[in-house]
Image 1 (cartoon, rainbow, N blue to C red):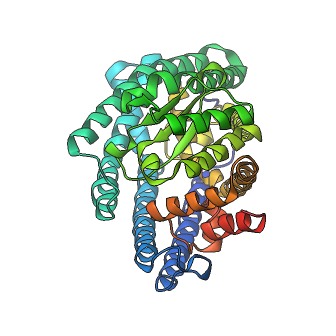
Image 2 (image 1 turned 180 degrees about the horizontal axis):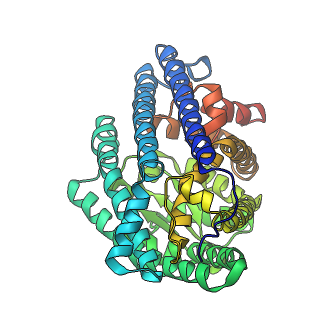
Length: 428
């Protein structure tokens, strides 16, 4: 697929629009982060009235400090990410990389693959210091990190190998389809992408997750009997109940219900089982089952497919407009394919749109969490769910006093005051 040199608006206008959008996004996110830091710091000195006697002042202040540290670090990542994006686009980095790969391997499919791989490798190396600092400084400082340098390196090797084994064939297929299936390549590619995501839901729990963690069958007979009874009462079946060794990497706790069809399985972090009572574990699992019962997973999948359909449609049009390339600092190939260029540029532009849509999806996610809580309260005990949530908020150092506007933009889960307050109001 080659770009068509049509009579389009000057690329300077596109460059200006992109630079303005990127700057506006950064400023908005900086403003929101500053609000969050200020709001959390202002309420650091006193436990909220609703949690007085339930959360200690030390725990409350630890959560505040953890939130402030993560938010400040996020601001640094944001600024650096924007600079890297400018480097790839308007400053010509991607254009240079494209020319270098074309010179090294020639034009054609393999040049497109080489460009994608080179971009991913360079970006990965750029991100490594931030990953290291997040794990071995921030998480370490607040007592969450359990990852050793050796384990971190092994995870990096495994994830890279998995990316090559799974991502490389998919990338080759997508790039081939972009060049071989005509003007409707975006539709066929969307079908492949959607099928791949569905396949991952089936394959991930059984084949991929065990590469990184050990999953042992749940051995506690009393707890197993409780969750089996809950599953039967809620009308669910699963392939099994498993305990994941999450503690070897982090002190954070979680539980999830994953897969679909015969691959469904219930997974508890070992840290969760160590922190919660059997009744509380029951309530947390009921919440996860609530997401399936209320068809939240299916709704999110449909939303994802709808958004990706729109995205591929727009990409299909943009990839044919030369101003899309030149306006973003790239000289397109005149005779060769520009498929990888189009994909990479689109991936750098789409986050600007995501900033606008983010609050809508965050609000929908919070609504789903409330609904899952309500379902859990009917199947188990709202009191036990409130108790479990409070322990998880404390153990994970989640602030009890986030900035409301920051919550509306970013929080996929309701803050503790709203969530536990609603459970209490309905008899939890």
